[in-house]
Every structure is written in structure tokens, then in C-alpha cells.
Length: 275
Image 1: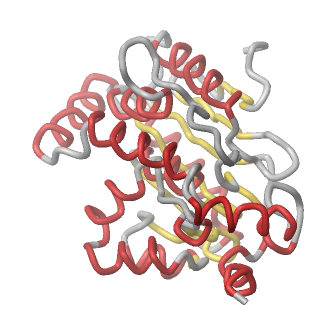
Image 2: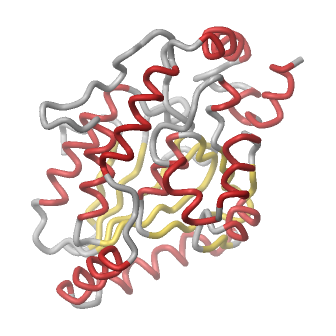
């Protein structure tokens, strides 16, 4: 546990863990995050009685802001010796974990923050406080962490293109209607709802939970690791594209990666960037 700096693990019981993302000031995913995700997976895979894990945030305004992209960085997260990018390795292991993964989303989940939530089995959002976006195209990039693979499966091609190409902030009510999340819950009920759901699942038989999850995945196959890797490779290449080279410095001036009006209102701010 001490080796984790960005993730706080609270073992509510042997069957139920809370994982709180806490990387001030706005919960960016950076290159250090990937090693922590791998270590977390080691811990969860080694927990024989784990049945449910809930991911939440220590920052009420940001679930996970986005990835800390660096211009010209051709290898922000180089493939491991086995051939997969670290992010692909993490989300593949998470999907295969017998325990149920739940994203409890308050605040902004943009870019890889959205894609982190998409990698979980179940997503619950605060109706008033959760905001979702895939902002990459507006920065001259592409979504590289699973959005292109998962959003069309959840909401259909046209809505996925609206999300990916429009790059706007969508509230939890729209996210629920589009299928981005399972349910949007009024914020005053949110914590009690998530806690009740997690404890309910934790009370069930572990073998039945694992078998049900495995069979759902077997009959409703999701994206493959190869598909995730292909998109990751293009995302890495996109950090060298002229569009990103022109847009990201402007975004940095506007407050990218730090507490700012840009980070609070990214969708609206992209209109300002075009001007």
C-alpha cells in the first residue's frame, strides 16, 4: 500500500475495497500513474476474497481530469516487453478480474478519465456533479484509451461521433440517456446508493459473481487488446501532429493541467481556442 502515491486503498472488508484517485491538484493521469495501476492490479489479483472494488476521487471537482499529454513525446507510455501498452495491460487485467469494478463518478471525467470509467464494469454518476467529455480531437489528438472502441458499442455510432468530434462537456443526465453511465443519481443520494450497491454485491457468493461476469463477457465480447494497442500507437503518434503542436501550447496558456477556468469548463473553452 505504501508504494501507491496517487491511489488510496481503503479495505472496507476482505470482499469490498474502495480505491480513491488522489493526484493533486486536478487528478491528472501521468506517466507515474501507469506503474501504480499495475501495482494495484497485482494487489487486487492477489486478494482471494475480493468481490467488489469501487473507484472514486478525493477531488469533488475532478474524477480524473485527463492524461498529461506532452508534445513530441513519442513514447509517453512505451509498450511493455510482452507487447502491450501499460494502459492496455491495465484495462485488460481489470476486465478479467473476477471482482466487480464500479466507477463512482463525481466531478469531471474527461479523456482518459472517461476511459477509466468505461473500463469499469459498472458506472454510477452524481446527477449534479459529474461531467463527461472526450476532449482529444479538440486538442489535435484522438481518444487513445478506449473511448473509440467502447463508446460506439454503448451509445451507437452517431452519438459516439457527437461525443468524440464535438468534444463538449456533457452532464450526467445526458450521459445516462446515451448509455455512457448506468445511472445518474441525485448527489444527496449518491454516496449511500453506491455504498449500498457495493455492500450488496459483496454479500453475494464469489463463485457466482465471477462466473456471471465471465459469461457475460464471453457472450458479449468487447474490444481486444490488439485494438486498444492500435489506437494507443496512433495516439502517441498524434502527439507529434501539427494540429497538436499548434493547439496544445495555446491550451497550456489557458490553464491546461492546473486549476483554471479551462479545466472547469473545457468544452466551452475549446470554442475560445478556435477564436
